Amino acid sequence: MKKIGIIGGLGPEATVDYYKEIINAYKAEDRALNYPEIILISVNMSNFLTLMDSKKFDEATTYLVDRIKRLHYAGADFAAITANTPHQVFDQVQAKSPIPLISIIEVTCDEAQKKGFKRCGLLGTAFTMNATFYSDVFRKRGIEVIMPCDNDKQIIHQKLFTEIELGIFRDDTRQILIKIIERMVKTNQIDSLILGCTELPLILAETSYAGIPILNTTKIHVKSIVDYCNSDL
Amino acid sequence: MKKIGIIGGLGPEATVDYYKEIINAYKAEDRALNYPEIILISVNMSNFLTLMDSKKFDEATTYLVDRIKRLHYAGADFAAITANTPHQVFDQVQAKSPIPLISIIEVTCDEAQKKGFKRCGLLGTAFTMNATFYSDVFRKRGIEVIMPCDNDKQIIHQKLFTEIELGIFRDDTRQILIKIIERMVKTNQIDSLILGCTELPLILAETSYAGIPILNTTKIHVKSIVDYCNSDL
Image (cartoon, rainbow over all chains, first blue to last red; front, side):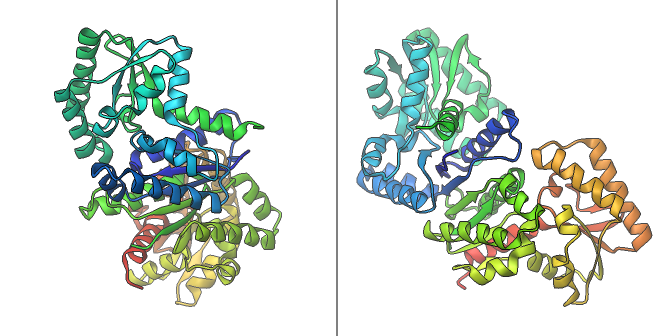
């Protein structure tokens, strides 16, 4: 088994979800207690978001590359970042990384392609919904990525940073998010929905909403991490 | 804030508990999202327990020192091990560690002394209950540590490794553990009880059982980690 490197803390709720899901994958294989070594750096979320907010992308890249180098010093053979938002600078980070990185966007795109989706809705932070890093990857494989309208984007971002990232999961917030998905199905004819923030599956835990299938980016990313950990590559 | 180093995975359930409790401590202080950097190495539990089981204490020491050095390479300013069992070799590990370590035994003893306890019962793995690393530390401060009878030790160890370490929390197991505590109160006149395995507070979550107060080693350890992280020491 390769040593798994994880950049976490963006936010902590999803970090726990990744750790538990990786451990569970080995429990399910009946290899109880024989877990792979996981090296995690949980960063200061506030510091990183300040860089993203002020569009200091070079500094954000340096910040992530520094942590990945430190994961490597600590023995990690490869790494993954447990959040969608930092993938805005994924290509720059990967170019400077001493170890292979598994992109949440690439593996989600693999899954969308395998399932034959053509028009994927995308919910995430404003950073993710206002950027093109999802649509750039998906467009190359002939898949359109559709964002919510501006008003809905604002609602989602606000709910993420005042509740969900803090581990507060309210039923009325869940209903608001489901209404947004219903609007996107009706207005934009999306055939599937990407939960493009690794905290969103903690409040939207079903495999379909508004009659369309959900791409749970945490679950897809964890499966890729475990497969790579176990592989002879 | 100092960078926190954590040796986890012994077992994974308690590791999640530590991580969440550390993060929660900062939420409670209204410093939302401004979390300290946490560097965690989650080890292969099966490998480590094999060393302990075959009494290869020098190898177990080397195993832990290697991980602590790697935490240090990754930037940790100090470290803690999220389990009681490995504290059997704590003194040897500390002697070779490049960074300060916070002993779960020492901080639990501080707490017992502060509360004026004189006869503490101890539940933990067989490794912990059959060793003297708890009683050695507590005796120096005039506190006796009392173990369950041999039959009860076997029951606790078996429940830990077939259920609790795997995240299985059954109500009948909880009742068996409470019966053991009741027997210790009656037979040994203990005035308090140490949950000397960081998974035990996940199944025994109350602050008292059988009429005596509980020392939750996870909670006590996390508080010390957070205090040291925030201190100017």
